[in-house]
Length: 181
Image (cartoon, rainbow, N blue to C red; front, side, top):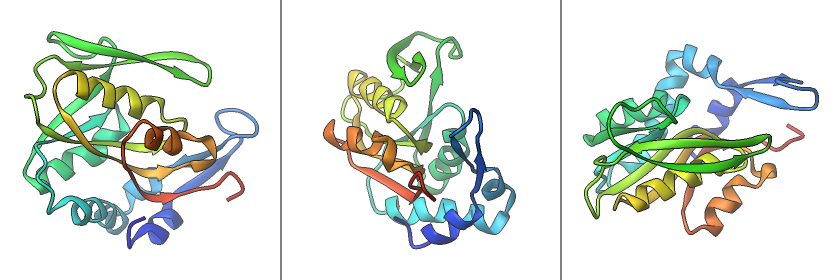
């Protein structure tokens, strides 16, 4: 957890019963609207990764882009989008993953990385971990090396961060929420 983790967590809004009854949605919009909080969020990632030799930030569509782009800028490395199927204009590789309610697919340009490139994967939230694991598989297939996975929020009760760890990847979360918070 980041040194700003408790503060960041306090700025995130919980919306009960959205998108369906019984779900507590963790809304990062207030975090993005608060310039001081957003700066602390980006600084949390910069401080963690500034001494690592990273070649790229692979950010997951779409909220991962919000953190990934300024982080890539601050760290002086490239920014690579991992997009939902059908959004990239060049040759792609894709990975299908399971959601609570079905399947989804993410894509990466086939020439996004060179063999051995050191990649940080960034997204806004880890729930079941499917999207992050799909992105990690794409990066590995393209020759890149996943250094770590990073997120604003971890929802550990849903098991995603444990699945990511079990797959051999480190997870960094700025903050986490349990179901009863």
